[in-house]
Image (cartoon, rainbow, N blue to C red; front, top):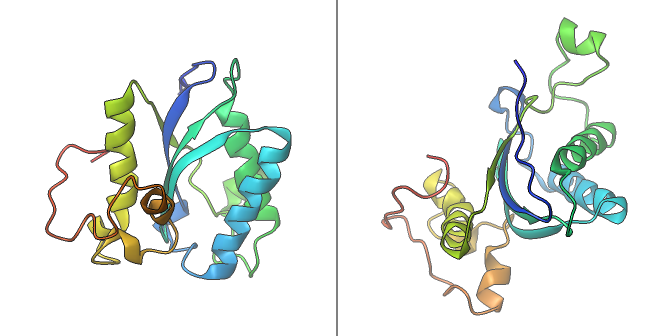
Length: 178
């Protein structure tokens, strides 16, 4: 099966990446630091802007904007995933299966990722809300401000959210990729 990726020069995209088997690989600071370092390393040669992000133990969501005329988010994700695998700060949690070993791959990530082209400001806002609400949705915290691995507090600093936004009883039906 061949997947078709969205090709939008200079586009803004919402992404979801999941760990292999939904293992909680990003559950401690050293592994999260490894992922952050991968983003920084890849951005040096292949720039992009991270508009919003949340790193969960077994997946991440983010919104990127590519440079004008650039369409290659696939290259960036491949480089980020490879960088994380090569620089993983601990023994790999599960050995790769035979098929992955034959291709020289590790078992950190699911092969594919989901992307959604952000269509307009409303679509952007709804996906940013979804990203920031994700730790509350999954029951890790009662308020978005309590999750340390997200861009939420940056949005609070800019005055775009109140600090107490997204308490557990808030309703966000239809936001993001439910």
